[in-house]
Image (cartoon, rainbow, N blue to C red; front, side, top):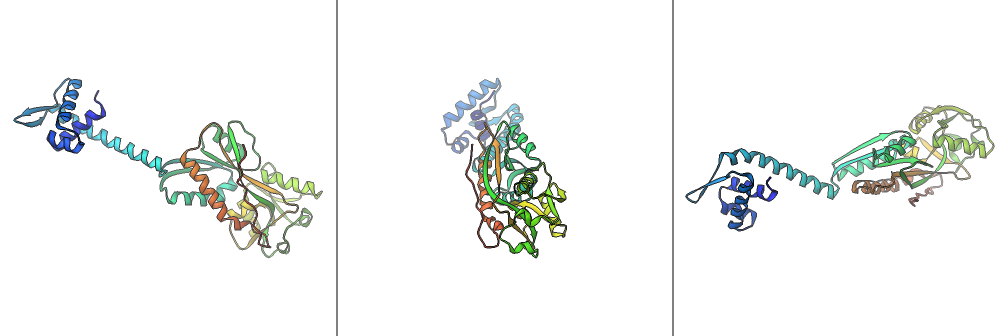
Length: 315
């Protein structure tokens, strides 16, 4: 079997026609090229060139071998380029699993910004339940996962991304929109749009009303915050959501008023526990944090104060 160096010398001699030209192209001496060719011929068991009056004539075997050699080096060049692109973070793939609230809100903007300087990176973004997110990440079917609130699952590590207030989304013209915050009693006689009670925000709504000793009367139950906002816009009622929902449906016709006392909803990053993140994964997280920072104004209540972004990680 020929070495890469022997194949390279053979290719250069075939392309350039002389040992002198091949030596110059390879930046080695002529004797070094001759020795390498002789070594290659010994390995192969047949001559590659015939010497006729200081000229090299390629044998039929060499002519047969040359096209395959060119193809091999073309493939090698592709590998080298791809490796360089991976090193520079310009190529590769990133598989992201997220609950629908993330997939509909922050992640599209982050993906678009991320690919501006990495057009060859392929991203797969899948929307699924929080449990499925954890399973995909733990089984290495996803590089990164995004969920809301607590998550206990083996094989993954969870860290905090940001915190927003839990509250009520309503039309800007609604009487409650003039308030800085609302309490469950303010909503007792409103038609309420809630997320499924098995989902984190649905659980948060039940807890908030129970703590205030106010019955939670759900008029419409949905599975996605974007649907809840669409229903509010259509005049079907008021939605109990967090600030992430407003990121997903930026508009001037809807506002969110947080509950008082403040109830925080945490957005969390899920990663494989025993696997170092790839360069692309690390850079995507940085991009997402930038997007969160630029969209922080989406959380402004009526007095203009911004809600905090918490990026402190926990093990």
